[in-house]
Length: 435
Image (tube, rainbow, N blue to C red; front, top):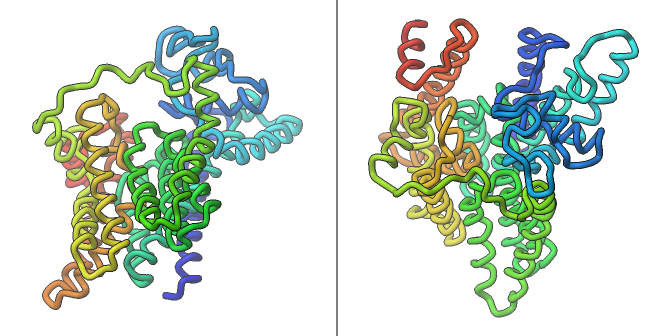
């Protein structure tokens, strides 16, 4: 399929997800029921504060949204300057802000026409605007991921890998069901950092391109602090480019960009917590253990990245094949840095309680979706190069994606029909019963 046709297919997939999200939420909640639930309330609170109050005092926003916690106005305690503390970053809200503002305008018109869309600033169209912006950024992230797979593996495998990983991992859940969590935005940010790093690497000594790659890297940390290990990928590209004595400005330009990209988050953290990297709510690190790693990767409970998402295992194998296969040195180095980045995510998950309360199978790893897309493309390419796996290999990879999609359907039906947020074992039993 030509490259333009692949771009159109990714755009069509994003449009389909947006349409299903709108129809689903309109059917289940209507115009007046709250649309912002769970952790999304703490991310969303920044939007009315910035757009309507023009400050970072979230006290009145929390009084309306009521995130989980104690005092409705101070669910996370009082920050350094007397404001309501918020351990959730502002980065996602900054990406959603244009859509939110457009939705506010529609809410204002609807109110004048006599329609009840909810409290102004929290109305249905404002929420839908923010959510559609989140889905649009996912579409951009998917396209950038596809381009990265095209450059590192081959064009013919890029689109299948992108769609398989998007619809065959928890990335779909956090695009379609919970776009106002940080995970969809994190996919976009990681894809942007990796793609800009690759473009800068190809142009070698252009400081402006490395500054842009650094700014995207700062955005990654501004959206999810625990995704910092994924910066091994663009940082590795910078180090490869900086090996030449003719390019000493590469690392400096990227570091300056990273500071600029993180600056909005640093200002928000300082306003709320009095420090540019917050320590509130991080908790004490746990001692690493093999049993903990086994639970993170293979649990049948609420964790278990690879047991919930078997396609991720195939993608990791694909990255390993790229690292050792007949690819040029830069591609092999990027695959190695990708594997190291994923291993570091697992290590952080082992020693820090970021993974507590995981939903639909290891949501902490949605940020690594661009790397999984590259790895899946590599796995497909390898299978097609092996006579014995030429037919069966791609079918197996497709089956792994279908398994996760089937679990997604069962998981959602459990919630809608029975109000049960199922573990993997519970979801599997329910999924088998649907046959």
